[in-house]
Image 1 (tube, rainbow, N blue to C red):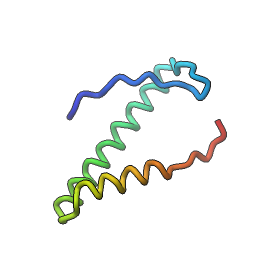
Image 2: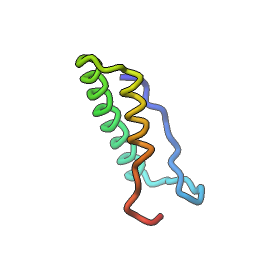
Image 3: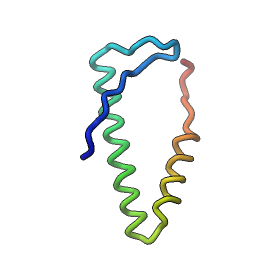
Image 4: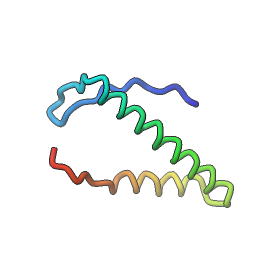
Length: 71
């Protein structure tokens, strides 16, 4: 697995999210998302899909996400 980059999470106002548990959950979520995306990419390529098209579809999916919470 590639090296996990240390991310400094910030609030909408720019304050650093310093809570250890919050940072742990965010990192775990990213790890899980990455693994699901990696598996889906490999499936798509094995089934004959164009890798760049699949990556573009994933990027569109991410761009279309909306929060149900008001920050």
